[in-house]
Length: 255
Image 1 (tube, rainbow, N blue to C red):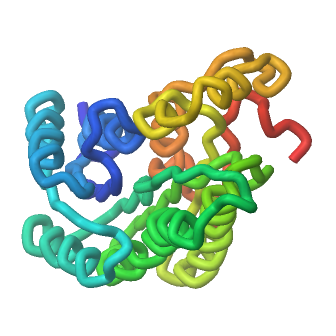
Image 2: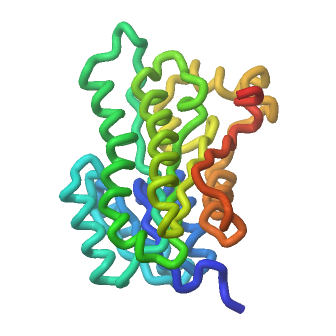
């Protein structure tokens, strides 16, 4: 029995960490039969992730180091994908960073660093990948934004701004790529326990899991976010583009 992503090639950025959201997304695609390109910064971690995914799910994988803030790196990744697979069907822009600080204390460097990775990185990787995606018969792009990009959070002038920019980039790409049949959507997770969010202070994490903040009274799981990405990549979402979906346990009700 064939799997829904059999014959598809997916690139997932920020996918090397075994406990990260990107890895959960890559695993889910591979479980559905798709070949996976794992992109991240740490070469050793990337190669290990690619090997583990290939062994676990029996799909072809490729691990490639890349700094998504540099166009030459993104172009190099896409050239390697073309050489190895000859095509690209799915792009998941997941790479992201946190560097929280209060507005009046946030440095220009802290603001630029987060904006460069979270927003510029999405622009550059999408720009590079479009050379292959626009030739795909059913191209898909899913960008990982955040509830913070909709609500704004104290201490996250950089992060909230970057994730709001991801939503805007999603809408622009959806309009521009629609003529070639490429669908572009965004996922806005609420509080999910990952390596990145574990860097938040204990006080912030306690606040984020308060029932007053999350009606479902718990953080989300990486798999719950990956399931929504899987939907957007699937044929079930064939008439959906330019949207964003909150996956936040109800934290953003009313937005």
